[in-house]
Image (cartoon, rainbow, N blue to C red; front, side, top):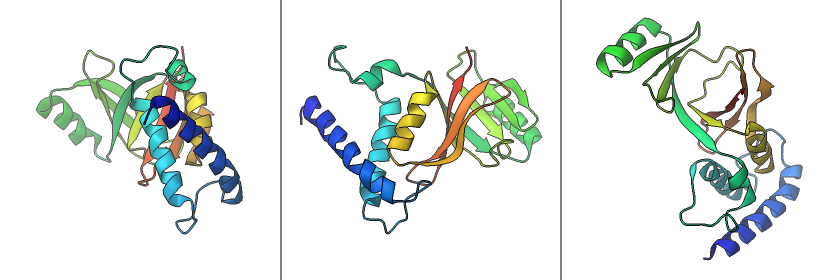
Length: 184
């Protein structure tokens, strides 16, 4: 299928979902809702748009939402209540550098900013555990796409005291994703 017809299909599908999502619960779709399967497929496309980069396309053929938003890094978040053992394991066994953290989260990585792993207790503000953090340069755009896709927002778009703008969204597998943007 040609890229134009794929994009045309997505636009048609998103438009058709808007009316059916208005009838469904605003926080999530029940499993017996007739559009759950299509909603899951649309959400997977949304996530793929965050990480996929087209090959050999000119600026004129790249959709505008891909030109205006960039994924900067994807970082796993390990749930832990034993920070001392985690610190020993990730520095001594795995060989990552201890990059500090807060009283509820530790950061490990290398000299490359893109290589980072977090070990955390439940998120101090959201009181949930995001399994992965995806840093983007325009979190407002990602939030708008998540809402348009009918995804369940589990923590609202928030400006945090420690310099992040973020929200949590549940993926079709039940995993909580932290979509985030750093200040400046």
